Length: 315
Length: 271
Image (tube, rainbow over all chains, first blue to last red; front, side, top):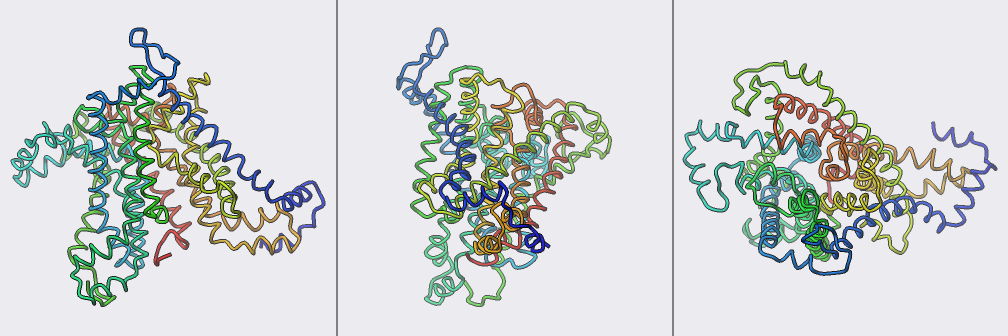
């Protein structure tokens, strides 16, 4: 069909044809024309605002008038290190680490099974089984957990039916991870984070496991390694780029999220919530900006490490 | 590890994989049940009874319709912008090597790699500095920025698999650059663009974190849902909306999967 269309087109000598000839002769100009719209959009709108925000973190807020003092200062950054704010940063980073580790553990069997054993229809099923939760609405997923963790919800009901309420209560009595109920505890926040970001771990992990040839594992077994040794010494190092690639998502997404801890969790703040309150009700843009620099720095460091491990090939 | 390739997976692995998949899907299925519950004051489980009346109630809610309409409009325009920018960027990055190529792909990924709250707050403060009032277009501006990456990824993957000699052949046969684009390049990348576009649409349709910063008084559907999540007022309506959102987002994802499955997305073998 399209072949016919091409041959039937006259060799145009119109403006379009001359323009395309000119572009063909000047590949650099053509490249610039291709790149200009996306580069300008992302450069001006995105990077521009990012740097504008960064600049604001070097201003400070006048404690009495509440107005922003437009003079270069590191005072705002110093404020990050007062105990209350440091707590927020440590809490968020710890949570992100736990979620990343939890996601890696949960994702591995799914990714490994899909990469090694699933064939044909099952392969497609596994792929969709990860893609559908990945792409379905974030808020709906959070909402589902609000339903699950509610006092009158299904989780408490299951524990009741199994006569295991005592076990749940014993768990909730543990300080730090426990609380009055799951929906106001760190464990609840952790569960929801884990649920929402898990697919982001499975996909890159599976991509890197696909590339591990079965013969390596066979060779390892033939040379006398036990399954656990093969896993630790052969499979894990080879899958590491994928795990790191996945962890970029789980880590970064947890660091910046402010909705999940607001809906499920204790009332203690995470970085995202701190940013939100400082820019909103408190009107302290400099401190909010300084707070956003924290995940940027952490992620910058993380990405740099990931790049050195070759994680970007697995994306 | 058994050396026989045909041997099945260890039982433990099967169970763990099945449990993982169940963990990912059961909560979503639960919402489908809740949409039919007769209980409207609490999140009681098991539901005391089943009813269809909340669908009618939701149907007659103007605020839900307005939010839905705004979301669809924002997502359509953001997707259109992302399609143009993402394709241009992919074409430039794939065909030539130039200084700063790595930087370009990094900038494209950055809006997704950095936490959404950073994109959101930096756009918000930039709008404040530039005295731009919050409107429909400020939402679109934010959405298009992070939608570029999905189109870009799909387009890059397809460009890489499309042989460059096709384009040369077209030129040799006398087609000019625009004809080549129209009759050779576009048909080759069309399904990838469609898939990328649908994913971009789904991404924008669902976005809430950036939107809370870039929207003024308007409520997109996710913003509407967020308000319900924080202060539940109409639980049954929220249940129905949640269910509809699930069903509506499933379709583009399934379609995008079928459009790209013959290629790189289904990894049946190592690259």
